[in-house]
Length: 351
Ligand code: FES
Image 1: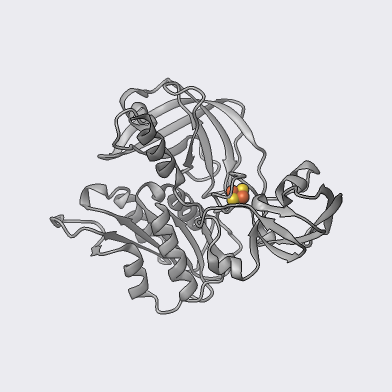
Image 2: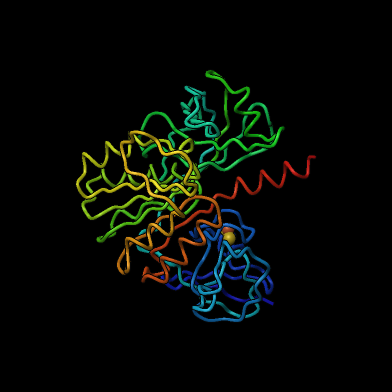
């Protein structure tokens, strides 16, 4: 039997089969809707269920919290329709779609940022131009692992000549990232597909911004921060960069420079392990969990826009804190760092 799916804020409808997911039906009829994994893992397709009878397929708690679900938020890719359904996109006011590209890129530079994070800079050779919004990510396929893609966020600002990625080197022998770290060199070719993800800068937000990054999650936060500040954003913008120990800190100079140049910008570096203290640092050190530092600084966060990037437990804790302190769910943007989890799982299964 046939049913109908309607996107209320677009005032567009499409026919669908009973049992088809909302996302499948919309995409089949060319209706613009944000998505990424199509498997209930990323949360990109979150939307409000206005009316209708749906059956929800299994999804990750990282993609949709119980609190969001209780407010009527669902995942379009996991919602099978069993009646006419009406949904509404969560942030329709700044919904952007860039052309999807598959590009050949040449490695322009490849160097270490820390003991386990690689900075990769790519020059587009074919398939461009590449438009994206600060905070989005792309899928990279390396010559040492043909047919296997990994998701990495762009760390550069949109429009810059070189694309930059921060690759966390997974410690297990044989992981893709360790093979990349061992063998990738300038001149090698990398295939890039994207852009993907909806945790991108909402430049029209007229209020304060809170960014929390964990480890190489600094990449999209760097892009968002630089795009906002260089784009004329004048409201207070706070970046909390959480790492384990001193040796994991990177881009301190860049953060300090931004802080000096833009009075509205404040950067905090938070180490979760006390360890030996560095003698002289450009930015002061704080200790404990990065979310504890934010909680200590902000009794209330109502009206803030929040961007989080890092390991899923950090993103979960940051999202819970932001909700508690008054950030609206629609103002929380986060792509949890799933590549680490995926790669760790894959590496474990190879052993
Ligand atoms: Fe639906 Fe990723 S596209 S959760």
